[in-house]
Amino acid sequence: MTVTLKSRRFRTEREADWRRLENLLDRFEKGQRASLSDDEVIAIPVLYRATLTSLSMARAISLDKSLVDYLESLSARAYFCVYGARTTLTERVARFFVRDWSEAVRSLWRETLVSGAMNLLGTVVAYVLVRRSPQWFSAFVSEDYAQGRDPGASYKQLYDTLHGPQHVDGLSVLATFLFTHNARIALLSFALGFACCLPSAFMMIYNGLVLGAFLALFGQQGLGIELGGWLFIHGTTEIFAVTLAGAAGFHIGWGLAFPGELSRMDALAAAGRKAAVVMAGVVVMLAVAGLLEGYGRQLVQSTLVRYAVGTAMLMLWCTYFYLPRGER
Image 1 (cartoon, rainbow, N blue to C red):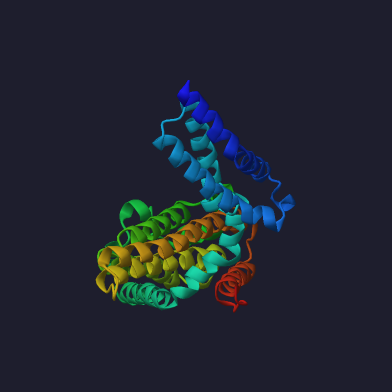
Image 2 (spheres, rainbow, N blue to C red):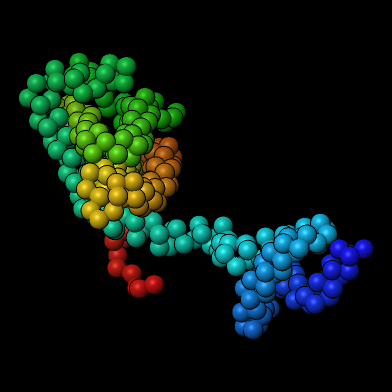
């Protein structure tokens, strides 16, 4: 009987504030945030702290369980209102594409230059070696992936890869290999970046070696320009994505090797958050490259138009990532 009286008196003295908080939370959770006045918005955290005090007192004096449960539920709802996420999923996705992704890529411009240089180095080295001695081709591309497109292939075999019936019916073996290869390189470059950048550097060079080997192979048959167009329509997007993945790996490795004033774990966590944003965008770019490769290249047979589409995509990405934006 004494506990019931205490509980009733306790409720009577404070129930008005609880009901007011409950009403404000109901409106907030039903999406009626715009209808809340400034005073009501300010009142929510004040009422939340008062409710926490009531809950603490109710537990301390062992009031009835139903009242404690009610206050716990009300406090939990108010906590998520006060400290929870302020944006919806749609708003987060929009912010990612409007600002977060491009900001993360711009902040990694040094790593991106290094990653691109590694790619270019591998491409040049393989191209020179294969042009001088075609036997080098097998050192960079396995027979399973080459599928007969090797230094022993005829002009017609290589030409059909670019313009023949296999291209019309679907993706060629070479196209499938290159896309799968680049996607794997991108993921591994990012995942292995923690090992002081070395695996990421190796992956970037190796990616360039494969590209350079194929450029030299087709170039020896006078198909270098055609292969360039065949690759360019989607390659500017795909290789850019791989380069950014390498930059993300470099950023993680650099943060771990040179943490500065932070501890290594804190530096790794900070670098990982930024690199993860870049990698989320890399997945988007690989998806776009897949569409360009699977549909655009089959629909566009003109080498000149292929170059034009590839150049337009490169300009689009550069503008999106590096065009100066206003302050927040």
